[in-house]
Amino acid sequence: MKITDVDVIVTCPGRNFVTVRITTDQGLTGVGDATLNGRELAVVSYLREHLAPLLIGRDPLRVDDTWHYLYRGAYWRRGPVTMTSIAGVDTALWDIKGKVAGLPVYQLLGGRSRDAVTVYGHASGATVEEAVADAAGYLERGYRAVRVQSAIPGLDSTYGIGGVATAAAHAYEPADSAIPTENVWDTEAYLDHVPQLFAAVRRELGPLPRLLHDVHHRLTPNEAARLGKELEPYHLTWMEDPVPAEMQDGYRHLRAHTTTPIATGEVFSSIYDCELLIRERLIDYIRTTVVHAGGITHLRRIFDLAALYDVRSGSHGATDLSPVCLAAALHVDTAIPNFGLQEYMPHTPETDEVFPHSYRFEDGMLHVGEAPGLGVDIDLEKAAQYPYQPASLPVNRLRDGTMFHW
Ligand code: EZ4
Ligand code: CO
Image (tube, rainbow, N blue to C red):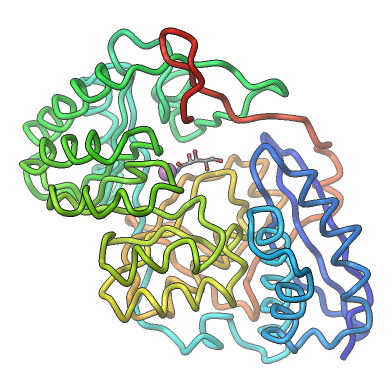
């Protein structure tokens, strides 16, 4: 069997997605997500100019060999653009392998380790009361875990809060304009507010619902230690990305000062970005996912390393990861022994139409499909109706104008 075509499709059914579609000489096709929010066309160029020509004529079933060919063959290793590009190819090859075998990909990864994949939803609000009500709504709709974010008094804009209305929080999409929106950030206001938010959520919703919070890389290790300690009474499932991703040894200080569980990894692109965190058990959940961590082939290696140290998976699943990534993530989640939790934001109806899929949400869980391969496809005609629109993620500045982390 040979690869005859590698197409890179860009579509914007509400937001931009990049999809790799590989065709074989026997007419089989496979798809992979290669979306890197706000930097989509860098990946498109890497794929079209540098990877596609290398793949024509290769055996699509040599998945691991192709991964190493692309990873080692570049000489310049790692980084989000490279690893997202490789992920798109790798995911498409797993899809083809599944179709050739006549099996869903999770079967090729060792088979089912659980009945379904537990997810967490995104609750938010312009006030604490709204955030509590939104979280309660998720629990009523059957979710077993909820991430809670709320606006910070005194700040016009806060990460994780829907721009339109709270009821549309599931449609939260921060990449809204070609030139980044500039937001203002105040660490003291944030640190003062978040413990009050979770005190209210626990008071209203009781001790049992699983609660999460995303700090989005904005604290120093010592500030994160303070927040972790103050959140201890509220028993979070995890505090996400407490410090900037590159500050790995900062996790030692954080870990030594709080028992609030820690999750990180959505911006990591390889096992080398999280090896120290896993080996020293500095985190509880590793949030790498298929599209940004080198595809199924590499993600499985990360999760296998994590399993040795009792670190569980908690894959990123915001809506800038396409349904192709979500489908692939569900195959991994279903198969691995150390699955923890999967992030889930429903895609827009337009996106679901462009990417028909066999996974389904029911009662707080996602069920992977039984179709051979990934069980997801791209509808080329529908995709063509939504041309690319430049959109960047926002930036943050402190009150005095200093550039900060977003
Ligand atoms: O800001 O995926 O946990 N989810 C997140 C996301 C990220 C976006 C960036 O593209 O942190 O909302
Ligand atoms: Co996050």
